[in-house]
Length: 56
Image (cartoon, rainbow, N blue to C red; front, top):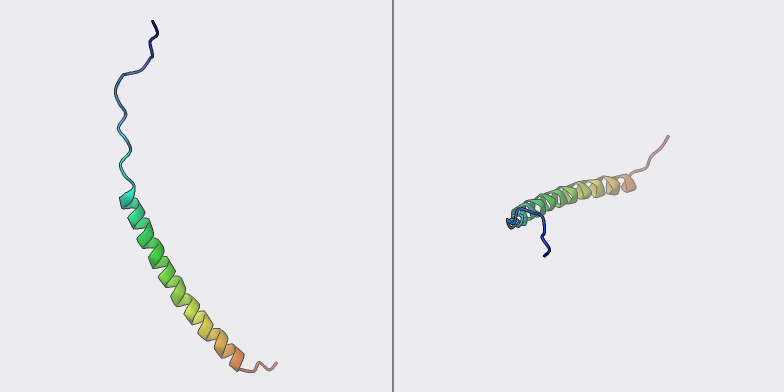
């Protein structure tokens, strides 16, 4: 006869991570929107610099 040590209780599966995943996706979308705003502002600055003449 073979016996296995253990409590015999079944382990509960971890709760689904869908809530955390939704939060992470929302946070990433917000960061990407902020990045797009900054990229547009940098593009404007670079366009202005290209149009100007720097004299030392």
